[in-house]
Every structure is written in structure tokens, then in C-alpha cells.
Amino acid sequence: MMAKAHAAGQKVVRLHTGDPSLYGAIFEQMAKLAERGIPYTVIPGVTAAFATAAALGIEYTLPEISQTLILTRMAGRTPVPEGETLAALAAHRATMAIYLSMAMIDEMARILAEAYGPEAACAVVYRASQPDQKIVWTTTGQMARAVRDAGIQRTALVVVGRVLDVSLETLTHHSKLYDRGFAHGYRDAEETP
Image 1 (tube, rainbow, N blue to C red):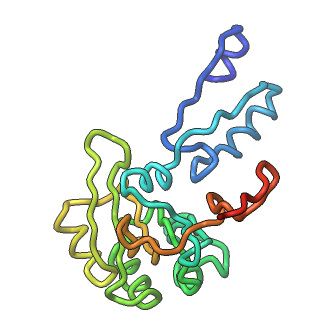
Image 2 (image 1 turned 180 degrees about the vertical axis):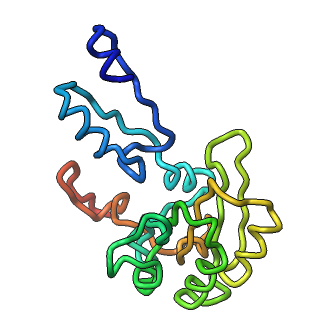
């Protein structure tokens, strides 16, 4: 359809949910367009991970808490490379956003509870940024049951990591970005009286 429209001089928009660069198979589409000599431009969107952070009111990277965000999915019909299993990535105990894995909620919960501990905070966000968005705050040990109780079967993202333990009231570690004594390429350090 895209090739026919292009040949007819029309402009085509292929709209993805989320961001096309993450689990969107965009590279395959780019290859097919290039094969046919059809020019294209990829315009980024908002991925579920960042819509989820906004919905949860969190920042994935907090000074001295977590400086790494892992975006991943469990192996299913599409395998993951060796060394990128959920268990291998969870061993880092960094902040994780897990896509496309709700059908394996029991296994996911077990793996996360083993890596982060069964009392570790986690959140499951169904259809982030959509009118029917649903947020389930739980622990890794209770996640599978909480997800089932909420009736969530797909289209949800799971977030786990120590950043979920920090609230606006308990934030104690601050970045240097707004520190008066911190100079960077756009600002000289101010002397504090």
C-alpha cells in the first residue's frame, strides 16, 4: 500500500503506537522502503516507558539510587540474545521497564522477586497515557496476583527498581545540576556566602 501510494505521488504516514524505534520493527520497514527506493523519515514518538514514568510521577535515574535504566522484554515467541534474559539483566538491580511480557507474569514475578527481593516495590501500568490507563502499585512478590486481580492481561509495562522507593518527601540525594557550586559548560560556579 505504501509503495502504491508513493508511486501515485501521495504522502504516506505509517503511525505506530509508542516510539517506532523500540519494539516497533521499524528497521525491517526501513529496509523494505530502501529496497524499493522510497524515501522516508522516522519521527520519534513517546514510548510506553516514558509515558509510564510520567503517569507514576517518577524519574528513572536518581543520584546515588540508580543511574541505569534497562528497557527489555522477556523471551517469548521472539527470543532474546544469550546474556539478555530477564534474570541476567535483573541481576544488575538497576531500574527496569519490562515490555511485552504480561503473558508470562508468573515467571516474571518469580525472576524479579529473586533478583530484587519479594518486598521490592514495582508498578504495572496498563495502557500508559491512554484514557483507560490503570496503575497497579505492588511488590515483586505480590505482582502476579495483583495483575490478575486488576484484570490486566496485556498492553502493560512493568517497572521495578529502587527509584520506586523514593517519594517527593523522602528525596535526599540531589544532582549537581542545580548546585550553586557546580560549574558546567553553560554556567560558572557561584560562590555561596
